[in-house]
Image 1: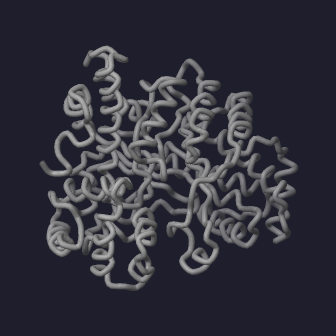
Image 2 (image 1 turned 90 degrees about the horizontal axis):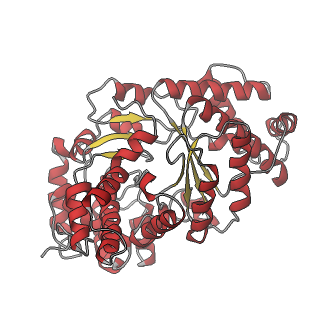
Length: 468
């Protein structure tokens, strides 16, 4: 039997029945990813396996470094084929790392390659994959069709001109593609040079001068409107933790003025200003019926030497340990008290905080929107079998798994769509194990719709995207 077989990860008869009858055929709604809109708009064709698979994958980069691979073969200037061969040599060393599962699942689903990747198979894999990448089926549009992707949401700065999204909407792309509003740079008053450069871009995008704080808020609102007009229904924020401290308009205006004058903004002022802005963003999202996504707990750019050499997002980030409960509760309470709490998905990077988030979301369900506040799927270091189970167990024990909006790729790679299959197999195995142990009834009428809805229908219902 091959390693990736029909019943991969499905350890019981109930799990196999749930997956094959209720999960496998469901379409994909990838509501949070980092695919470049330009690649979809131009229906990108990938020159080789390195380009589609290794080019920006910091998961693989971290593993290669841990295996002693020289940086020239990781992010450096080595030939793409040599970089791939270095990755192939690394793969056998990744046993028990989720990369081993993902690698072979992706090779099987994209290329029909069913051998174990190592030094002895690398050249044949490289040649066969490159041959298939030249076909229409593995262009950007071909991949979206192949994996039955109904819709995906990219991650976009408010200063972006959305031209590629307009091109996609007017094209024959088989999937709907929507932007996501990611205004993290609006909070960076503690870095005046970067902040002012971004404000300049915002002024151009909004086609207005930004001489005052009110101008700034108006420009952000204008871009929020522009995103909505092209189909955006989600925002996203990447934060260490939320900002629950109150801050008045006058205080935020003063801090904004300091940053615009290139004066130092203290850490306390940064927190206060960010609290004001996050409250403002929440009001915008609630007024438009959007879903706010909040990614909490990453400790980024830990290696200062590598940051100066390679820049951010190159594999030097990890889990942080900031206290989350008070700030998260304070933030949602402030919006709720103002009748401006939007739909919200909260993603957690520190598994020690799973039960904090799983219980906190229950405080703000409103009895009108099913699952209004969501505990998001395990992400980044937690988007693997064990941590997916932790997240779903915490949600099940403290809330309603039945309302969960399920999986997303959170990826920059067109090779990541099997992550949805992986999640679905883990979900079915989890539910199937409970059935086999007598903890749940052995009833497809109960468990089947639960699985099917988590795979697609819950997200399609919840997110208010213009899918038709």
